[in-house]
Image 1 (cartoon, rainbow, N blue to C red):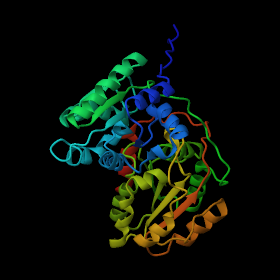
Image 2 (cartoon, rainbow, N blue to C red):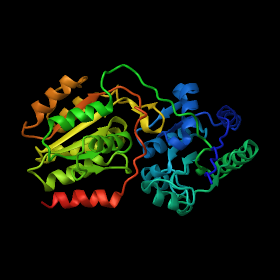
Image 3 (cartoon, one colour):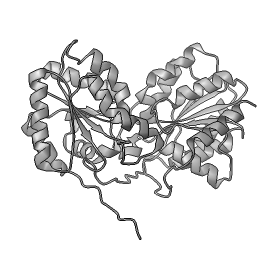
Image 4 (cartoon, rainbow, N blue to C red):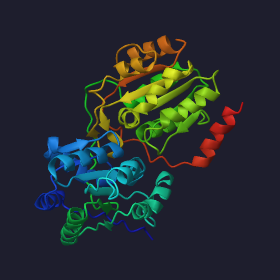
Length: 383
């Protein structure tokens, strides 16, 4: 008997935004999420300067707070539930009723919802999402695909925000705020992410340790190893904890000074916790190379733009104490030359690799035994 395929239902996003506007919600900020893809893309295409894509979720809470302080109008902050960790500090020490009592709507994609099935990195977060909100005394409603119910929820939520001057959360299960996932390929730069990673693999020592960031970099590194018939024992696949791949790599590099350690970072991930770049200013780690695969987009969750192509990562890295090639690299030849020039430069190094947007569409989901792969890396690092 064939498994029945049930299509995800979703709210009509124009109606969602019309209702929000009717209730006075006209300013939006946050970090894109695949479960909120329809919402995020509508905001991107229609709200322009009234939609601020933030570096991380805590930053978005701060922006929203500033908006309310300056306008007395309630903002909306969107995020994946994994981003609640970044948001907890400003939620409890800035906007809480015991501090400055700042109202805002929180639209949260519910990855790992119990009973719905998801990848391992989302399971615990899905389990504790509602409990986190309860512990912070933030009321919430789980959304459903029903416009009349949505209108009632928004009325309740906005009334609560105004009367009690506090946040109110809207929890979006899979499908409710979804939209079509576009493969927004561009031709600004010739290399794809996959091609750039393969150049790096070809030009670094075979025993190099790689720490790949959340999203496509982990998947492409994994399947490149499969295609090349290479082991995974040199790879840390940072399937969750966006923005922390470089810190994991730093910890490994400090412990293994005679082994090359390379970060395969993303532009949005690097910006999410950019303070991590400053660590090399006070450490001697010549075996550490930080590479940002910069396509200027939040590609894994829908392709919304980041500030990646607007930011001078190389100048920032120079100022933080990295050795660089003083400008971004834009093709295979420049990347190869940069790797060779920096490999034995005597200090931590950094490369901003400009790549084009667009997914190959050929990669299957990254379904593997996390414990088996990480235990293989741990065992390898003991040698």
